Image: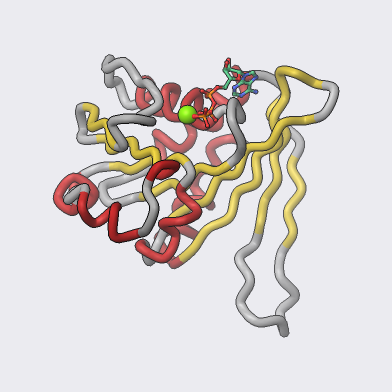
Length: 169
Ligand SMILES: Nc1ncnc2c1ncn2[C@@H]1O[C@H](COP(=O)(O)OP(=O)(O)OP(=O)(O)O)[C@@H](O)[C@H]1O
Ligand SMILES: [Mg+2]
C-alpha cells in the first residue's frame, strides 16, 4: 500500500490529518479492515463514505469476519441497522433524513458496548465525539483499485487511527 500523509501546519487551526492509502485490490481493502478489527474496542465508531460500490459493505464484511463473527453481512439499506454478534453495529445512514432518525434507532446500548460501522456516515459525524472517517473512492482506469482517505476526530479516534496505520504498515 502506498501512503501519503498530510499533516496540518502547526500554526493552523486544528485540522484533522488525513492519510491516503491506495488499495490496489479488494484483498487490500480486506487487509485494512482487518487492521481496524484488531485495533477497535468497545465504543469505537467508523464512519464510511464513498459512492455506490465504493466498497463500504465489502470493508465491513471483512472487519466482521476478522472479529471471528460468522454472521452474513449485507448492506442494511432497508433495515437501516444490522446488529451482528459482539455486538457489531452496522448502520446505513443513506435513508436517514436527519440525525434525529438515528436517535430513533435507539442503539445507545449497542454503541456503548460494541463496535460501530456506519455507511454514508458523514451526516452523523456530529453525533460522535470520537470516530475514524474512512472515505473510499474509485480509481479511474483501475476497476479493482480504491483510494482510502482516513481521518480521525477526538482523542480516541486519533488513537484508533494510529493503531490502524501501525497495523497496515
Ligand atoms: N479494492 C476494492 N475494495 C472493495 N471492493 C472492491 C474493490 N475492488 C472491487 N470491489 C468490488 O466493488 C464492490 C463494492 O460493493 P459494496 O457493496 O461493498 O459497495 P458499497 O460502498 O457498500 O455500496 P453501497 O453504497 O451501494 O452500499 C464489490 O462488488 C466488490 O467486490
Ligand atoms: Mg453498502
